[in-house]
Length: 274
Image (cartoon, rainbow, N blue to C red; front, side, top):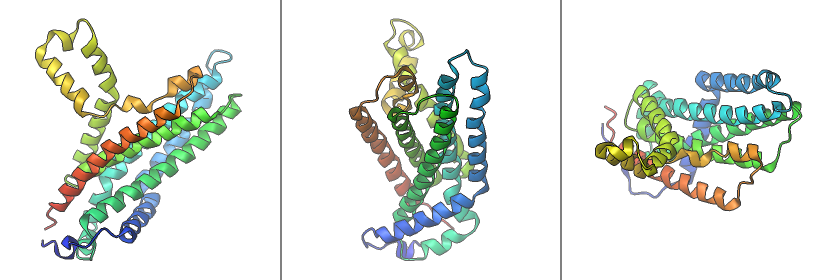
């Protein structure tokens, strides 16, 4: 299929990007997969009330805080992977992609719009879950501080990065492979800090085996370290999250997200829809 108007040298038009983003947001809100994940995540967070009741006296609020960080991050990432895998595929399945690519819109505008729409729904999800989580903390006689909000902000940064990964794979592959590869990158990203520690250990697999060490060094150098966005232990211990740390995390997430989006743009630009 010819690329037609979508390949014109016309500059990026923010209005077209925002139009795609708005449409993506509306589609995501009505999507059964998103609604199911949202309802399940709310139930999961509320279940922490039962877990806190089983905790040692005085530790109920601590259990809720720890469980809440885990639940919000887990389901936000799950939503980024599932919705990211389905965004482009839905356009192909419904044949609407042929209408889109025949209009005067660049393919990169389409991808950017999809990403912004996905990012918007993820931010809304994290905010909603964060509010519910805060209410649960208060019901268990806990205290909600600005540090909790900083933790949620870091979750948004992480899911924004994961959404960009999902868009990259979605632009060139099918939903199954997109979900598998994105989830794999997420798991490796969460283990990067552990691999780095093993590389610095005096002995062990990555020290005794040259091949394993070379592999570990490549993983640490290439994959994003997603532990950067997890400050649950600092919040539990009452250690403030410095503004400079938030800035560093934002730049880190933005750099990786930009890289993955650029790859997505190139992949989608060369994709044939015949």
